[in-house]
Length: 87
Image 1 (cartoon, rainbow, N blue to C red):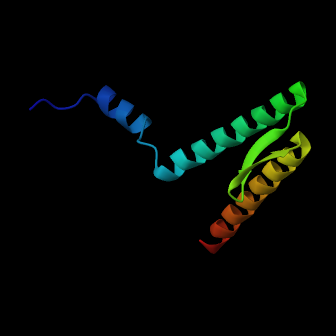
Image 2: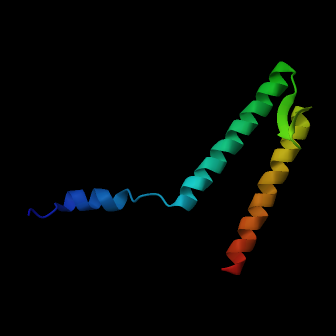
């Protein structure tokens, strides 16, 4: 059996497998960015933002969509802060 070179070991430790928590955080960030892009497209084209709520589709203004997104982000931030404080 041949020993691993230090270069191989360094590359493995430099690129550790991401944790599920990190993957989920990246997914949430991507979702937020996509939502902001959809809101901006809605503003540029003068069309409503279509959402799914209470089992049906609804049309809301870009401003309302942005308010909802910002509220959701703040709620998530506060929950994460509370979890960090409890640790």
